[in-house]
Length: 245
Image (cartoon, rainbow, N blue to C red; front, side, top):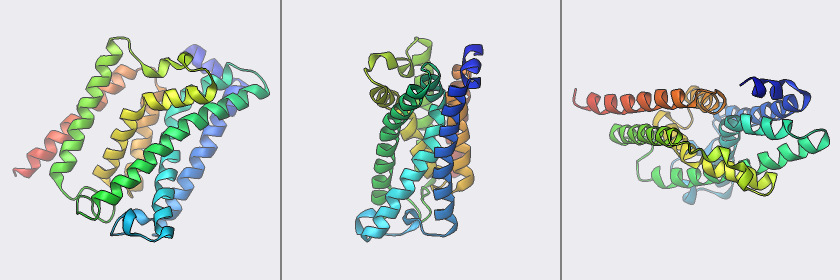
């Protein structure tokens, strides 16, 4: 933890952190503008396949901005690390290549999320604001996410952690891809959770972003995983119990 703090406080580490903040801020700015102006195609009925090209691009652009705003901060520890272990101009290029590799995965998740929204919304699974119309579906997603957190926790107890296998990849860009691939289950879980609280709910989006950032950055990963598992499982159980009252 002390070594991580030293990497953060040096010039290269601060440069990496500044880059993350800037890129994420741009994503948040786009998201907020689209929500406030009511131009997001995520709230349009009919889905992606039946929209005009402009609206289709708005859907994809919105999800891409959400991926940039929400997922990039969660990889801050790795980006700061690859920035700090190199010196001078090379560190900036290394961090840029690593971040680009991770963003390629994040944008792929955004693309798949837009496709899911286009399928679910016309058939009534999602409401106009990108929220599950059925509480049963929301409860099932919460339970699935909770059990996935338990699975990840069990894997960490067995000393397996995909984010620590970056040395297996030959270049910074491939390292970013490897890290992004290792986080795919959590990224898809976050997409499901966005549909639980509403894909256009800024408060919910900020809450999920904070959770991802804390989970990825704090040294107490097992504790955070346990808290997340208990929280999501409890929320899922309460959702089903509320249906009986």
